Length: 214
Image (tube, rainbow, N blue to C red):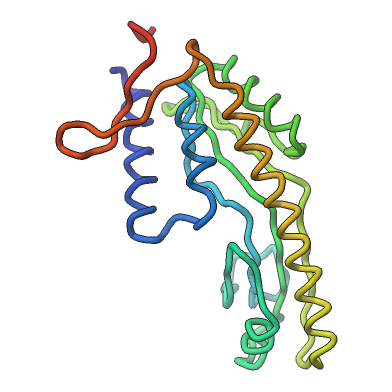
């Protein structure tokens, strides 16, 4: 097994470990799994889509900012009002983002295949970021996003209206996540796939569907 497949094996072990300790996004595992089943592909640092509330002067700033609420499955009126009532340092921004995948491929051809698959199901804001020892790094993004400056006070009706639209935007991203999983899964064939299994020690490893890896 060459170095690239060693990187892939380690990445898969990280996915399993994060899943076991509850660090992995609760609805992303099935999609990650089908990416790893492609022989020349693995993922790192991916997100299934989420709602956050950020305390920052501007929503895109990292310095002097903090995430005060985060959930990958949705937000409730109670979540919203409770977070606002805790106070702020700068401004509170409600941010909804669709799924984001960072995919490493072993070849340029595989990178283009992944891009074509992803763009066909709505991941239009996707492209190659860099090439390094792990392969070709492809970022897959949708256009699903919402950024809203929160007020200091909301009545029940206003809060509910904001929560409904935020969750609706989130679900638009989840629909694209489901379609991405389906299109990658449907792309698998004997020439580009591998089977995930457990070895004799109970550790995750790959069973290759080809006789020899080039």
